[in-house]
Image (cartoon, rainbow, N blue to C red):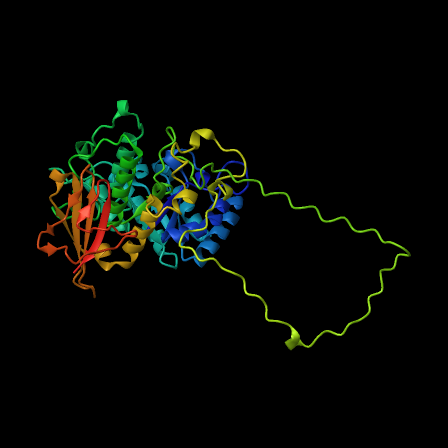
Length: 475
């Protein structure tokens, strides 16, 4: 489970309005509570100039980040861009070596950046050098890459041979050529379609044919693997429908057989700020308030009389058993969490940040607010990540997609792998329609004895409300 971060937009530790590595270190508790296994630090976000280089200043902050991350069972990887040219391979590999020497647990190479270099053969040679480099370091260093943007058999073979995981997991319906869209593509497309909430700007339906050149690297497309995308997606003209689509994407990503790479803010459902990715939204205002001033110490009392204090005779203390037992504090029990003012918590910065990078929905989609909402997208991600780790059926079980397109719903069944100690079956249903979805029978699998794996659990496990998600377990 990987979590990709743009250091300049995650957390500011100095108050200058720009994120830094020390800010990520300050937020490691949050990342640990989210349940991710490793962090991927972007060094060249969006293909622009590198924002994170192995300089002396960054090296000290990176050392502190790696050291504190290890204490929380988190690994830190570094994302590299593409070499400037085919003649820059040596410098590229040298930069990778510098990060590994610094303590990086591995490297992530976005294939879209690699494809700027001419020829799959040259890319394969570069990956081979990076694979040999990571293997030469102790500690099981890893090399990650995602699926190529264009269908290229030679490049796909190189990625499958030299890299360990495909970070961009297949999730959509395969076309006649076997190509499928990915989670990242679908989320980008859906987010673009959901950008305007006005009724006059209703989003267009996702067009799977535009992705006909995408292909999974380590997986072949089949009827039961990957998930089939519903043919129709309701027009998202309100916040409730937007949240339903974001929840569906979260479950599609974490309840299917795939390598998982989350982008920062994805667990909050942050909307893109203009043409750029937004700042991580910690509180509604995302600003850290100045601490209240400390009370002034009391002025000393001037001496009176001749400067000597009043004589106090010595009184022998009473025996210890003469003292009454200490009074115990009164604790009021309540099932409700203690109300917290979200804006009183630390935000992105204590200074001023670029307003163009503020998320349009940041007032509601932020960590401080969503943490205390049981049905929030953040808490759904936390639960699904935990299930992805702990549930063997969800992690590696066989997958069967059911034909519920006519009901505008995604329904699939995961059965326990043969080597697993459990025999349970997991049922996942995402209702994208405006009416309740009834689960009477799922093929040969009855749902009468199903129990919910999500909290809060629905009152009726056979009925999925409009826009709701059901993840249940049955034998």
